[in-house]
Amino acid sequence: MDRPTVFAAALLVAVGGIVYELILGTAASYLVGDSVVAFSVATGLSLFGMGVGSLLAPRLPGPSGLAFVRNELLLGLVGGSSVLVLFWAYGQTDLYWPVFVLLSVSIGIGIGIEIPLLVALLKEQGRDESVSLLSKVLALDYLGALLASLLFPFLLLPVLGLVRTALAVAILNVGVALFMLARMGHRPRWTWVTAGSLAALLVVFAASSGLEAALSTRLYQDPVVTATTSRYQKLVVTQYQGDVRLYLNDQLQFSSLDEARYHETLAHATLTSVQAPASVAILGGGDGLLAREVLRYPTVREVVVVDLDPAVTRLAQTNRLLRGLNEDALADPRVSVVNEDAFGWMRDAASTFDAVLIDLVDPSDERVAKLYSAEFYSSVVAHLRPGGAFATQATSTYFTPHAFWQVVATMREGGPRRSVVPLTVNVPSFGEWGFALSLPGSGSGLFAATPLPAGLRFHDATSLAATARLPGDLTEEAMPASTLLSPAIYRAYQDDMRRWRY
Image (cartoon, rainbow, N blue to C red; front, side, top):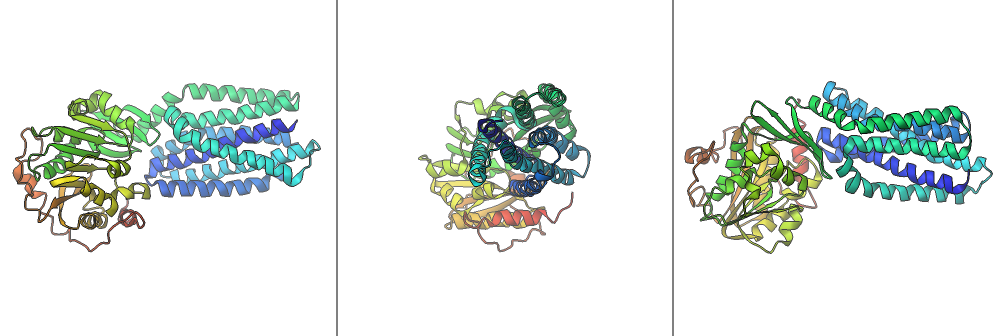
C-alpha cells in the first residue's frame, strides 16, 4: 500500500463527498423552493456528520484498509439511493424533512470517516510523517472539492440529472473500494461483495431513467409528459384532459386552463398603455406565452426574449404541447431568444424598447431578489424609449401582500418620475395575483394609448380596466425599497409565506 494509492483514493473520495453535499442541497431546493435554506441546512448537517465520522474512525474494528472498504460500500449504498429515497418520502409521506436530515448526517459521517482512515492506513505501513502526511492528504481532499464544485453544475447535473449523478458517485465509491482491495492483496470475501455491489449499482444506473420517471409521476397529480434537468433547474410538463402544466423545480408555472388570465394581464395592460409599440423586451417568459400575446399587435417589429435557462426556451420551441400553447411564438422571425441572466443583459444592452415585460419566478431567495431591486428597475427605465412602459409580475396580492407592496415601492424608487399602477387579477391555479405597471409622468395613458387586439381568451376592455380596481381588503402599506445590498423583498416574501399552512 504505497502513498500514490492512498493519495489517489483521497482525491477520488473528496470529489464524491462534495458532490453528495451538492446533490442533497439541490434536491432539497427542488422540494422546498428555497435554495438558501436548502443548501445551508444540507451543508450544516453534512459538516456535522463529518465531525461525528472523524471521531468514529479510530473506533472502527479491523485493519484500516478493510474499515475503509466497508465505509465506501455503505456510503455508496446510502448516497446512491439518497435522491430516490428523498423524493419517495416527499411524494408518499409528510416525513421528508426528517428523512433529509437523516440522509445528510449519515452521508456526512461516511465522508468524515474517509480521511482519518486513509491517514491511519499509511501509518500502519510505517509511513508516519504526522503533520506533513496529513497536510498532503488534506491538500488532495481540497483539490477534489474544487473539481467536484466545477463538475457538478457544468457537467454532472445537466447531463446525468440528480438521480444518476448520485448513482455515479456511488459507483465511484465502490470502485475506489475495489481498487483499494486490489492494492491490499487477496481478500476473496470482500472482493466478491464489492464486485457484486458495483454490478448492482451499474444495473440500477442503467434503469434509473425508469425509476426517476416513476417517482416523478408520484410527485404530480397529472401524468408526466416530459421531465428533464438543466444546470439550473428541473423541468416537468404534465397533461390531463387538455390541462397542460409546466413545473420548474416542482413549482407550478402555469396551467393551460387559466394561463391566459395571467399572460394577457401582464402583456396587454402594458402594451395598451404605449403608443404603437414596436420593440418589446421580455425578461423571463421562456415558455413563449408572453411572446404570443405581444405578437398580437400589428405594430410590433421586434421581440427579445431573455431567459437564463436554454432548456426552457428549447422546450418551448420543440415540445408539441408548449408549441401549441405559445402558437410557435418563439419561431416567429420577429422574435429573438437570448439565454442570459436578465440583470446583466439589461445592464449591458445597447437597445431601447417601447415596453419591457418582466415575468420571473417569485423572489423566494436572494439570488432572484436582485431582479426585484431598485437598481434593476432603474436599469429597465434607462432602456425605455420616450413614452415607454414596463411591468412585472409582483407575487400574490392575497398570499404575499407585503411582498406585493414592496415591489410597488421598489419600482417607484427605481423610476422616481414615473407613475406605478398596482394591478390584480384572479388566476384560479394561484389565486389573486398581482402586477405592477410603470408609466411615464402621471400615467394618463393607462390602457388608452393603443387598442386592445382581437382574439383574446379572457380580457376585453372592461375586464382589463377592472384589474386596476383593487379589492377593499388590499390596503397599500408603506414598505421600504428592496436593493442589491438590502434585499428586503426576499425577507418580506418569506415572512408572508410563513403565515400559511398547506
